[in-house]
Length: 408
Image (cartoon, rainbow, N blue to C red; front, top):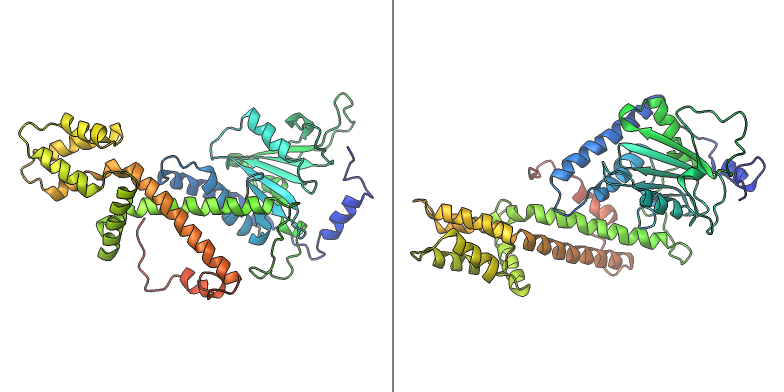
């Protein structure tokens, strides 16, 4: 394995050339901002977890927040040089669109397994341009510095990296009892990290080490060329689409009850109810109005009971058993009240439809993103007027003083 970092090597010369002469590293106060930003991201993820759609894990929101609130806002990485994809969760690129850093993200609180370490390290061989690789669950960080060229044939393990503690100095004599190390390994625990330690650990994330930021990069000015040799762009694009679909799915799922009850307008409520009624009919799900009629007819009989309601929901109509039991008990208790009304009983039926609403939100988000993507392609080809990109989008993104906000 050839050492890329010996004095006089081409790689070392290239590294010197790519560092702008006006390099401005972060000030000491900025490193406190780095730690504060990471803690804020973890707090945000904890709050986000309480609102997540069941089955939605926390890694994707954490990764997205890390790109936006950490790499872009704190370090100043231009979005055009940040990719999120399948092979590498986050890739940071040089001007030649080559990955120079990667950040593998795990769900906050997740403990990395031996198999995950093996998969993570095996990916480092795919791009010779990689110099640093981070692995993190938000509160615990690891950094692997790659100092030699990795071949596709060799297996890379954590033992191939020399462990370096905080402020560690190189050994006085080389340890000849072990094989040549491919790089160095650093660790950082966020709960006891100091600004000085953060500076030492996160220094490779400085974008000015790889990019010339002396002049601002206009949005959209840097376009990535799609080639077979650079599949990470397709991976990043498809990953971004999945992230957008997941974001819209969560939004639609969380907002469905507000749409349905008229909290955001009677017109919206009407469209929501009619759309969901039609979706149920086309998806072989018993529509709410039909189920309500069946329930009222059953409650009108003399020998009705909660068990009969359970059989109606779970056996005849095919709803999941657990919500069927809960809804049946609530309905029967409500039916016994003197002031019970059909409208109140209708409202009690909605927990039955939670899985259906989740599927409805998923399908709606796919259609929504597909239409946005189609329109954006039309904008780029100058077939459609520019309405959802560039300057036309700015008035929509900027909140108006008189705009009403929906409370979370």
